[in-house]
Image 1 (cartoon, chains in turn yellow, red):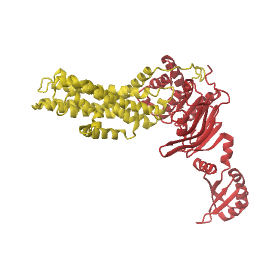
Image 2 (cartoon, rainbow over the protein chains, first blue to last red; image 1 turned 45 degrees about the vertical axis):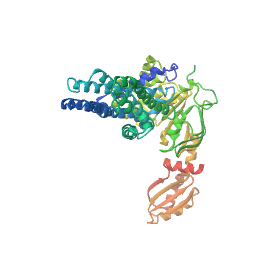
Image 3 (tube, rainbow over the protein chains, first blue to last red; image 1 turned 90 degrees about the vertical axis):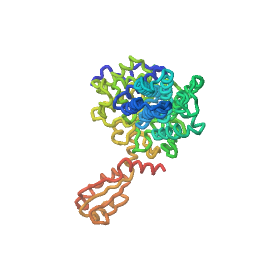
Image 4 (tube, rainbow over the protein chains, first blue to last red; image 1 turned 180 degrees about the vertical axis):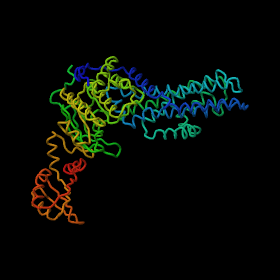
Length: 260
Length: 319
């Protein structure tokens, strides 16, 4: 046991880590801890499904212009939302369940840095999965009946990235607040995001899929025109960002209060 | 700046009529206690409210009513104070894919240490706790005892006025228990108040000069270890004695001063239960009574001397 260089008292007094550095540290540690095949395989599988489906769809060559829109809106984006559900809920809930939060939130550690860092990490993971999915699906449909044009695919990629961020924030917030967050998240996806958003105004405002639909112009009764897209795109993007930030804000509020 | 200095005479942490409830469940009720520098044992059976007490003392949760004061101040507004409270939780959940050194230095950096200093300090602590060979190992590869030492390294790495250790000796072998005890006394002699929570009486007795006893969220006793020990020894004790003639032995025992009740088992004449107000006095007198009765004793069991029973008895007194 080497103790010669050790002293409990002869230590310099620490200063404070800047908020940005603390957030970056939480982000990098969470990414490092999550980015393993053992943890990521369910999400990689979820992303592989739409890619495989796109390959099949392209070869079926059904002459229906709405098919591709429905594929992205109702299949690919749902797979992305499920990825966000798993990764977002686990980001804080796992530590909360294991009782590891007190150590991470104890002052002088900035309690805000943890949820913000985790939100960034989850958003990076979900957006990365979304980008992979878009690249895969578009690549496999090139040269087929559904060969996507640049403008269309740009909107899909934006939808995947911003939608990924929105879902990541929402589910991170749920994970911070609810013990049964996965159940709540699934309930939200089915009841609010899928069903109620069609008829209830408030649910539509809280539903990423409505903003995604606006972004990619696949909502019923909408005519896909350049003018429509240009006019509605900023609002839809802002809606998705706000939903993501609201979810992150809930996590921050929870961690700043009695987060343990 | 002296590292562990705190205003003389002021308690490091003081609970004043603190109650903390989680929904309808009251975890801590009307709790008043003051802690001075030294090693303090926080003792109570599972569910007594020890972890809630530690979280309140760390400032991680707020009381539902009452006040917690650190160095005489309400709340943790003094930025200097933030650096003086360290915690070691009882769970060993750590990011599994990080190496020991990455996690420990990361925790120190989050506490405000410059990067180079955090690495240097982390290496020193791992060296002290026998983990220098494991510093580049992933946390998932460590044994439970090794993970416990990593957590303790984190708690002791920074200077503290209040060091809160939740079940710190769990999973440690005797060698490392001694070493961790030495670290606690080192910190205490430098002026820190080291709070060690446990549900094992003997474990805390060996470490702490002062004890705080909790039972079902209530303070049942607090003070110097010897005073608490006297309090425990004065509790009523039950002995169950298996012998060849219970009635003959009962006649002898009833003549003893500390004995308050003797009951012969109705099923036969070979087991009797003895209750005494003073356990030590009964144990001193018992051999003489056995010899005088001339019966052969095959077995003596104590009942009600486990921690839960003792705490229940103390709690009944408090009520």
